[in-house]
Amino acid sequence: MLRLHELRQHQRLLLAAAITPDPTAGALDGPRPLALDVWAPSGSLRAMSQHSARLVGLHHVQLAMPPGEEDAAVKFYGAILGLDQVPKPPDLSPRGGVWFRTGDLEVHLGIEDQFSPAVKAHPAFLVEGLETLKARIDAAGYRVTDTVQIEGFHRVYVRDPFGNRVELIEPA
Amino acid sequence: MSEGWRFEGWHHVQLAMPPGGETGADAFYAERLGLEAIPKPAHLVARGGRWYRGAGLELHLGVEEGFRASAKSHPAMRVRGLGELREALERQGVTVVDDTQLEGHERWYVTDPFGNRLELIEEVRA
View: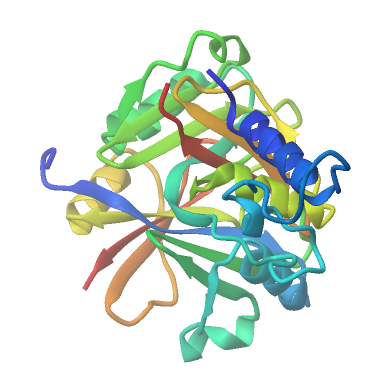
């Protein structure tokens, strides 16, 4: 399978060929790649940040954890929050860590040797049934913390077993 | 719904940045990645930081005193036109870092102006 960036490189070469005058070519009416406008060099009409690529959602969020703590991750994200553990691809499993998924939401816990928890940065999980989940987290011995509210939502924070901040938010 | 609650998706992902990073954040997240800056709720404005939204994704840059970049943890953002985005970023001098590929996907990493790691990923058909 041709990788996308290889394909793009190929398209760039086509573009370069189209721009460079070819002494054997007749005139300006030769074939040009369709992607010409996209691949015009910076400084031209489609300069710098103007491109038609766009971000269309979140594929996953990766949080860090210290080595050897996979069991704690499975207990918190799997048993308490109720996410399904999914197998890591074989070529990534030697790195350690655990992946979780439910519906369209995927969380990866990745090993970091010099780990320190994310105390400010965090993912915010959109929850239905926040009160029930809060009670469950509380019963498991984790502290659920209220914070400044956003209009139309109720939200709380909890720290995972490694100290990473996690937000749980529900439309009010 | 498992026993009374379920996760419907991501509401947002917050990344940290140092105080005064708003201009650098706009240059990267709005101008380079094409996200739309959206106003923060009035009662949260005093904290600084910037919020951005794209299709199906909301990213918050929050100010952290004693900021340290996230070198490992990261959000992975789905892209349509990943190769084109790569070309555009590389033309602007942004370093793109490859990693082990996931089956059925093309992906790579960049760091934002503060050193936070970001993954850009697109599903590809074999």
